[in-house]
Every structure is written in C-alpha cells, then in structure tokens.
Amino acid sequence: MAKSRIYYTKPSITELEVEYATDAARNGWGDRCYEYIVRFEEVFKKYLGVEYSIATSSCTGALHMGMAALGIGPGDEVILADTNWIATVAPIVHLGAKPVFVDILPDSWCIDPVLAEQAITPRTKAIVATHIYGNLCDMEALLAIEQRHGIPIIEDAAEAIGSVYHGKRAGSMGKFGSFSFHGTKTLTTGEGGMFVTNDPDLYETVLTLSNHGRARGQTKQFWADMVGFKYKMSNIQAAIGCAQMERIEELVSRKREILSYYKENLESLPGITMNPEPKGMVNGGWMPTAVFSPESGITREKLQVLFKEANVDARVFFWPLSSLSMFDDKPTNKLAWDIPTRAINLPSYHDLSGKDIKQVIDSMTDNLYPKNANRSKK
Ligand SMILES: *Cc1c(COP(=O)(O)O)cnc(C)c1O
Image 1 (tube, rainbow, N blue to C red):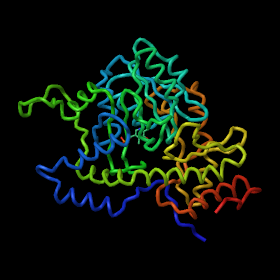
Image 2: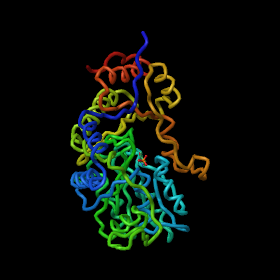
Image 3: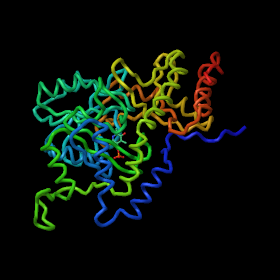
Image 4: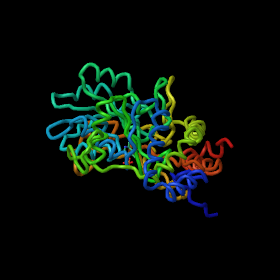
C-alpha cells in the first residue's frame, strides 16, 4: 500500500491569518500602511518581555543590522557554534569580520561556553548563542562571559520561539535577539524576522539602519545620516504575523506535544537521545531531532534510506559550517562534526496527525529495532 508523503514542516494558516492579510491588502495603505507592523512589533515584544522590537524581512537581516550596529567590521572576530544554519554566519562574513567556529555541547547541541571563552582574542567583538532546534544555550555561563570580558552575547532565537530559560524567553537575554518567521518556523509570515533588544541606544541605531540610515528625528526629507539597510517587513506579512501571535500558545503547545510524543516513544529505545528539556527550561520544540549513539551503528545515510522508503520527509542535522567549502575545515570541533553523521530531524508541523507521527515512529522501530516493532503508543 502506497503511503502518502509526510512532510517535515508546513505552516498552520487559519481563517484568521487570511482575514488579517486580506484586510491589509484591501485597506492597509496610505495612512494605514504601518498599522499591522506596529501592532505586530508591540505584541511580539510583550510576549517576549523586552523593551524594543523591529520587524524585519528576515532573521538574517535582523542579525546583519544588529551586528552592524555593534560596530562589527573588518578585522573583527565573532565566535559561534560550528553547528548552525548558514544564515547565522552570513552577516558576519558580509560585514568583513571573521567567524570563529567552536564545538557544541553533547546534550543541547548548542555552543560550548568553555570553548567559546577560550576562543576569545583581543579582536573578538561578539559571541552568538544559537538556540538550536529549540534547545536552549547555557545562558548563565554565556552571560557570565559577557560580564567578565565585556563581549556581547547575541541570541539567534530563530528556532526558539516558545523556549524559556528559567522564566526568561529565548531571545530576551542577550545584547540583542533575532527571530525568523520563514515558512518552516513555528510562527510564520512567509518570510520575515524580528530584532529585539533592551538596549535603547542599540535600538535607535538599528532603527536608523533599518530605515536606509535615516534617523528618527531627522526633519530633512530624503536625508540619510548613514548608509543603512532595507530589511523591512511589509504590512501584509505583519498582518499574518498578528494573527499568528494570537495563536502563539496553540502553535507552540502543538510543537511541544509532537516533541514529547516522539520522546515518549523513541527515547526508551537503546541509543537514541532527543532534544533535551532540563529542569527550569521549556523547549519550544521547533525541530524534534533524534541523535543515535556511536555504538548503535545507525547512520544518517541509513536513516535517509529508511525514511525515503517510508515516504517521510526527514531532514539531515546541520552540517558543521566549517565543513563548507568557503571556510577552513575544523574537524577538531568533534561533536559538531560527528553528531550529524548519526542524527535526523523528524516531521513536526502543526497539523501532523497522530497517525502520521505513529507512522514515522513505526518506520524507525520496524527497521532499526525489529524486536520492538509495533510497540508505539496510540
Ligand atoms: C531560519 C534560521 C535563520 C534565518 O532565518 P531567515 O528568516 O530565513 O533569515 C537564522 N538562524 C537560524 C538558527 C535559523 O534556523
């Protein structure tokens, strides 16, 4: 029997998003051309518990402007985990700075703070803390480094909406935070992002940069005070974002529900670990990821074959950025180089049915653990 394809991500768009987007398309012009943008920024910053927010065309744009506002440029170094999406490193390179890749922790797959601190040189301008797959970085250790060395921590929270670190939301703790609303993310506007900060000066600088370098108080028309960027979100995208924010609890709780269902069924099998949720933390559950122990002998390639046969759209764990052709190989980042060879991202979109999840789990147990087959819970 042919099984219908199970996709790994898909946005959840209801009548509410359609209604707001339609209203923006119909009425959101002239005097009202920023209404949804302002509203989206307001609800987002309240949700996050921060002072300032700027909606952007992407997370990459938010990172680019934030890093530019911190004065990162040629000759500078920025430390980040080798395990990262390309978007996190691209702005560093565009600004002419040098990315310094360090290894990750074995359980959270996020930057190792000890190695990050060891990598600091007189040229270090920032450390990027990416909360990978919704897992939280060790913010206590990272913020202590910020204190000790005066080097800002940037939180790339693109994958971590809904993740909470001891009562504080991911993205709200660093010098600034960035979010993505790309179609694969928990909250989507199609394309889009958000810059957030509690620093009034940094906010003003990014606001100016985001408006082609035109300062807020500038009264001269068409007058730019510096060369800026054009990374704005449109009002129509923001309208969809406003609807998604009204549903944010629902969107995050479904992600968490799917993650915990996978964890319940898979973590009892030998040699599998998944996204952690240590005491005091909430994992937003953006991307359920299974990592197999080296002893299990289960490889990425074996998993890809298995899921291809099961018609399941599972994705590989991020390649270490230092393995890409434009950077120098750094295989001494052992975990960042090794974990992806024995890991896989599992489907987790909002409307994924219980039956679909069971099918994903069964395709793993049947093939990898035949003795345990058909034991997944309903
Ligand atoms: C998705 C993602 C980004 C980029 O987001 P865009 O909105 O596509 O620019 C950046 N960092 C991480 C960790 C991501 O997962």
